[in-house]
Image 1 (tube, helix red, strand yellow):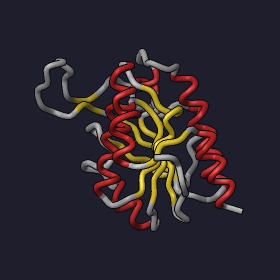
Image 2 (tube, rainbow, N blue to C red):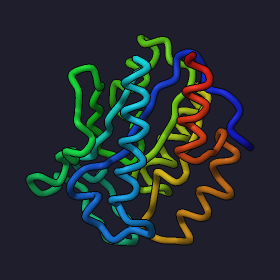
Image 3 (cartoon, one colour):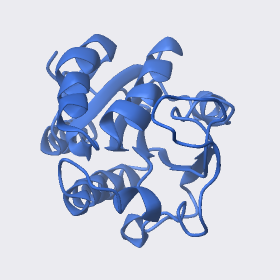
Image 4 (cartoon, helix red, strand yellow):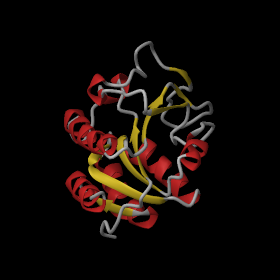
Length: 187
């Protein structure tokens, strides 16, 4: 589905652009994802729209076949990258699972702000971004995915999310398409 509109109260949700995550080997360079996310951040802040910065501080408990342990990550892993220029008005969500809605205040915050739509970006496409998009959709929010402002650890996982999953959850577009629509609808 092509990007059609941005609601009057649209929030930007930036997933896991933090020191430990951006250091991982990704399909697209993390520096490009950060750069495009900063363009979105600047625009949303300029228009006085809600900005949510999400960070993960631990792995969820439970066994999995990849052997990734639950529990706390090393010191500094969850520090947001400085390029995001965190502002006092930004809402920070700290999660311990893949999705930003599970056991956090994100749904309540968005409701309090009157948000009806979210634009998502960040790392990793098939993990944090997709999980958050699924829950946003289940919460009745319109979902927009800035697909060139996200990347994954695996090319096939990124492609699957972008081409098969995201069109079922919302609308997809590039960073520039989101920015153009934001400028057009905020005159």
